[in-house]
Image (cartoon, rainbow, N blue to C red; front, side, top):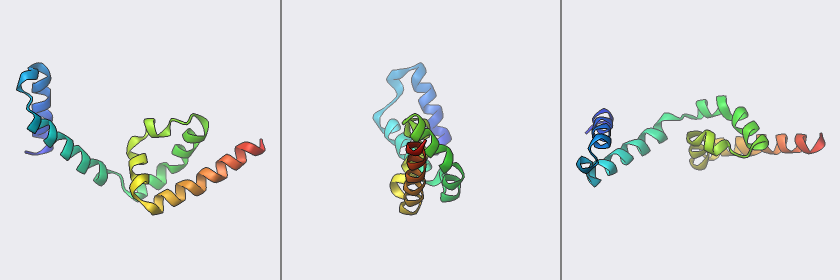
Length: 97
């Protein structure tokens, strides 16, 4: 079943909860996990990394606001290295003010 079909089954299930089987829910979760990994590229992370780090330093809730970017950082060591370097710079700058 494709993602569109799963979304339709989920929507139908919200109208009639008894029709939503565990198999459908598990299929939906598997499709979402695949989509998450494939949807965020390193280029996209680098474009948003400064915004993410600023939110992290300012509010501490960047992972909640940008969960896909956080997931990418958790699995990609190159992007995580960039994140940590930028975070260090911004934290040092904030301490100096």
